[in-house]
Amino acid sequence: MNIINPSNGRIIENLKEDDLNSVHKKLVHLRATQKVWSTRTVKERLAVIEKFGELVKQNREELAQILTSETGKPIRQARGEVMGSLNRITHLKSIAEKWLSEEQIVKEGGTLESIRYEPLGVIANISAWNFPYNVGYNVFLYALVAGNGVFYKPSEYATMTGLKFKTLLEEAGLPEGLFEVVIGKGDVGQLLLEEDIDGYFFTGSYKTGVHIAKEVASKLVPVQLELGGKDPLYVMDDVPDIKVAAANAAEGAFYNNGQSCCAVERLYVHEKIYDEFVSYFVDEVKGYMVGDPLQENTFIGPLTREPQIQVIIDQVKDAVDKGAQLVLGGDRVEGSGYYMAPTILTNVNHDMDVMRDESFGPIIGIQKVASDEEALELMNDTEYGLTAAAFSVNEARANNLLEKVNVGTVYWNCCDRVSPFVPWSGRKNSGLGATLSYMGIRAFTQPKAYHIRK
Ligand code: NAD
Image (cartoon, rainbow, N blue to C red; front, side):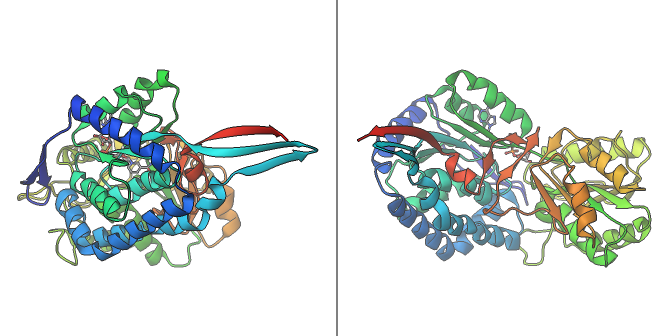
């Protein structure tokens, strides 16, 4: 499998793909190692993960360079991701022992009733490329600490990063064979669905997620899906500083080239401030440096996947045909590499694909609304349900709207962020189950009830 640098289209590595035979062998190894790992204390498992975190810090620059070379993520954002995701380890250290310990529920006379949390066994972690550290850590660190073995399927667009995880985990003291990587595209991922595995934890598109859930349904093992979004942000007319609101909204839409599951993908702005907001927003985006992701000041690099450029161009054409105004960008940037110009559309509505389908790129539609009620109706008019945001000076007003939005995460005066301390979950086509928080630890366990009579 060729690994391609999206900033110039050149092959940077050629890796041997896994096949049925190698997948089988790795699974046998995983099963044997997991049995031993599950007998280690939570403290011992945490010590390995902590050491892994230290190695990540020591190797920060090399890891960031690998990430940039295979995904095109601007180098500063790559460094930010490598370091930022270490907060998962801090979180695990602070609460894993509590949530993995036996719970005594009833003690009556000579009878004891308690719950123990056993690992699931060997789990499949089928992952995405857009934030390979964050979305990988959300699953495999938590799974390992809970006593599981991990069959890690990195995205074919972030495989070198995935292989680095294995090297560093083993250097940190993880038993060899407890974290196995399978290399390949969707057809290799498919091999995992046919194996005898104890849980499937997937991050990626709705289409693949549904396929996986159907394929493994008869196994009756846990399936968790972290899927896409079409996340709205509503800017109310009472924001104290329209320019600041526009800058924050633009960052939410264009950070990582818009390739975030929780990127702002729809903007609704109150009519009283609409023109001023749009003007500041366009100025802000015009200021973004587009270019080589290895340059320190680049904010917009290439897209990771070349075909996504056409998806975005098609959304622009559909919107303009239906009456939208293209105020910035709209086309591919000439030259080698998968560059798309940052694109802003105004006068959009919900008949347009750009306001309905996940764009996953540097494009945003801005729609004018007359009231909070209209904004709320539009925010909920979607198949997705990952996150939603409101900018307002008035907490009660923002809350009144956010409590009625059918999503897993809401933001007041912020957007496009994830914290390990609260659950990360999507509703509707955005997913099933939750990672992070204490729920994200328990997700990798199965309860066993003990009834003990002494
Ligand atoms: P994708 O669905 O194309 O691929 C995801 C993974 O599934 C890859 O590793 C791929 O090789 C594998 N795969 C593909 N077909 C398979 C099959 N038949 N069997 C098993 N595995 C298979 O998604 P992507 O392009 O990597 O990721 C982008 C999507 O992920 C976007 O929709 C984004 O919103 C979503 N995402 C969601 C979250 C979240 O936390 N909710 C986080 C990051 C990305």
